[in-house]
Length: 378
Image (tube, rainbow, N blue to C red; front, side):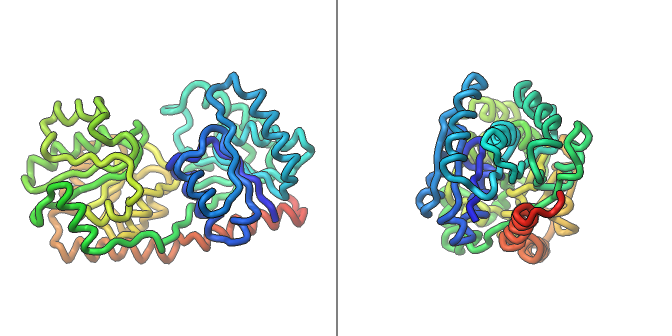
């Protein structure tokens, strides 16, 4: 079976990682899948190619490129004759879905991953989403949502509920390991002492990810604990980010924060933390939280998207956009003994390993593929 995947880009992100895991977990998928990035190759694309996956890039830079990109997609679909065309996120859903239909291909699966439809999307993205809602009864046979919290808002704006199915992300836990030596080495590089309790956050710098709320909450926490330090990991979470540096200067936290930026050794970065914090304003299915749970970290997270589904009762959940609540959640975990924090982290690790493996996610995707290919009514 050949699946042709169409995705907006292949930089580091939740959808991109899920696509990577879905393909790389299956030797047959590695040899038979085709991946098309509407924009650039990115780190995920490089990794896929290194594993032997066929990856194309189309270099789209604006909406003005839509006609030529549509035509290139038509040519690729005709060239590879896939059994399934699977698209990831709005622009890919629209362009990939239309291209497949123009070739006469009907086995189309869309993918949607957002819960907040208007607040942080550009006007053009909102327009594309609304067009997809109108076309959802005609173009795709299935629409895969990463979370129940993703499904419901899209139904409200007109997506065809009869075609929607929820498949949570799955994790490849073989990559989520780090040694004591790696933890110590990174903490030393960050100038953390043995007495420092390190509260960390992983995610690209973006309003959705709530780094501003994390900084505000850190201000409150720092007043109570002089030994607490804070670690930010993710694209643009670095010293070149003038907005982020401005926040730290405003709140007098320059000496309490370490900014590592985008890293390829996220498990090691997580291992260097004592408490994980997810301050997001919106999430679908929060990959970063799942990864922290897999590393056995006690977690504090905003109760957005399917965070509660993922965490169960193993994390401290607080309202979004409430720095006071976020700070109190962090303070509560810091106040625990080392053993209590360890036990909290182990409960989280057991939950995510038992419930959210990549094998389970792949089985769910494959069940959708087989349903479509068998001609089952959708």
